[in-house]
Each structure stands twice: as structure tokens, then as C-alpha cells.
Length: 364
Image (tube, rainbow, N blue to C red; front, side, top):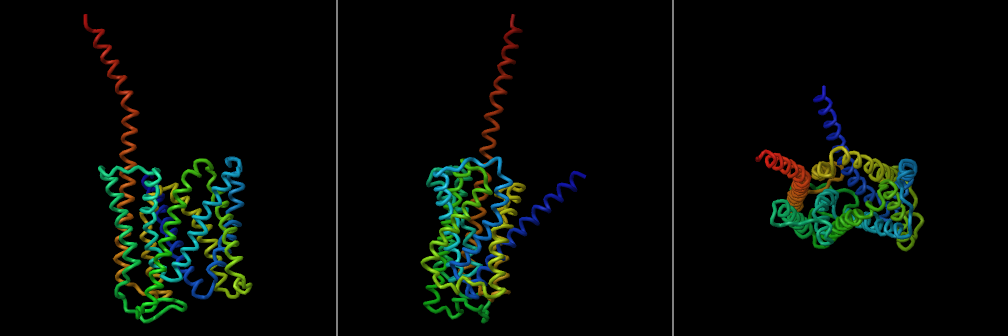
């Protein structure tokens, strides 16, 4: 009976992680559709974060009522900076990159986030690095592979693989590979790299804040709220035409609701549950599945073309991702071994002392 229960729980976890990656993949496609039909790159995240705040705030208020530390001006300032990295820069660069590049390569570039996070954390001495050990070397080599893969995607487009002639409406890329389109592609990849840098910076900056303010739902709600304020300030200068704020079609409404409810509501809850049940490494291992799902969906729905340079870069990034994750897992295992031996050693020393005392007492 125990074995059946274990398999069932494991199956639930795998299905939940698959659903999580499917939701992420769908968000890439939906975001591209929103840009294709003319939804503003500023209005889209504004509506997305309004929905996120409305969805998250009741859960944050009632579920964390008793564990919320008191708010201070210093904490609010840190929440504001956290929103600047995790919401405004993150989502802004993502949409710009999606506009000029494609959903498939947006997803591929996101696989480099763990490596970028490792570099930032190591620079700030928040992450241990011992290159003489296997785990340290794996993290360094994985980081190099991720950076190399992202560079290849950005600088080398390569010949098309499927030779498709169909092109999605509003797509700025063409199969003929003209110079201006190539520049747009390069800028798209640079924006996506900025998106990954912002995302990694948000995770690094968030780590010490969570220790001081462990109410994660409340923290996320405040982050989305300040991100909304920042986007509204940007919109006051960029989107002054009221017509751009009107939701005129069902397609526009669907893309905005998906971004707010699924990408900012369901995904956060599902990701939290998966990490609690399987751990962050287990969830991260499934990240490349998202890239595969996006590639299939983008080819079928948007008619996106696949290029050899992007495939080579994506493979390098995935290999780098697994190398970094393996290094992290190995480092954790070695740390646990050291801690276990340090806890056991005093007990063993005490036992040896007792045996020594007993032997001394037996000597006439």
C-alpha cells in the first residue's frame, strides 16, 4: 500500500511540473499573440499586474495575517527596488525581446537564468565557489556553456531548418534574412538577455529580503503592486493615447486574462507547491521541457521558423543548466555530509573517551 501511495504522489508531482511548464509555454505564445494583434507593450503588463495584485492580495492578507512582520520604510524601499528588477525591467525587456525575436528563443534564453544567478551570487559572495572540487568546476563550466549558448543565439542566426514560408501576422522576422531584420533579431536577443539579467538580479536581491520578511505571498503582492506603479509612471510618458488602453476584441481580453490569471496567479501557486514537494532543483530540471513545448506551439500556431544557430545555442544553454544544477546538488550533498560528520564526531569521541576510561579502570 505504501508503494502505491508513493507512486501516486510522485505521479502527481510530475504532472504538476508538466502543467507548470505548459502554463509557462502558453504564456510565451499568448504574449506573442498579444503583440501581433497590437496590444501595447506597456498596457499589457499594466493590466497583467492589476490582475495579479487583485488575485494575490486576499490570499496574502488572510493566509499570512499572523506571520507578517511589521512594515518599515526600509522594507518598502526594498520592495520597490525588488519590483524594479523582478517586474518592471524583467517584464519590459521580455516583451521587447519577444517583439523582435521569437517565443522559442525567449524560452531558450531563460534556461541561462540559473547560471547568471550563480555568477551574481558568487560576485556578491552569497554563493560558495571551490573550483578545485567537482561541484565548483561543474558550476563554472555550466555558466560558460550558458553564456556561450546565449552568445550564439544572439550573434549567429544560421540557416532555417524547416524552410517554412508561412509567417505570422506582425512578425518582424522574415526568412530572407535581410540586414535590417537581422539587426532586429540581434536586438531582440539582447533584450532577452536583459530580461534574464533582471530575473537573476531579482532572485539574488530577493534572498536576503525573504529572511527579513518571510511572508512570501505578501512580499509577492507588494512586488507586483510597486511594479504596477512603475509601469503606470512609464505609461504616463509613453502611452498617452487613450485608444491603446481600450480592450477592443476578445483576443485582446484573452491574452490579458491569461497573463494575469494563469501566468501571475496559477503559476505562482503551482510553482510554490511543486518546490515544496519536489525541491527547487527538481522543478528546474524540467525547465528545458518548456523550450520544447514552446518550439512546437510556436511552429504550429505562429508559424515561427527554427534556425540552426538558435538550436545550437539552446542545446549549449540546456547542457550548462544541467551542469550548474548538478553542481548545486553535489555541493548540497557534500555540505550535508560535513554537517552530519561534525554532529556525529563529538558523540563518537565521547564514546571513545568512555571506553578509554573503562579500560583504564580495568588496569590494576
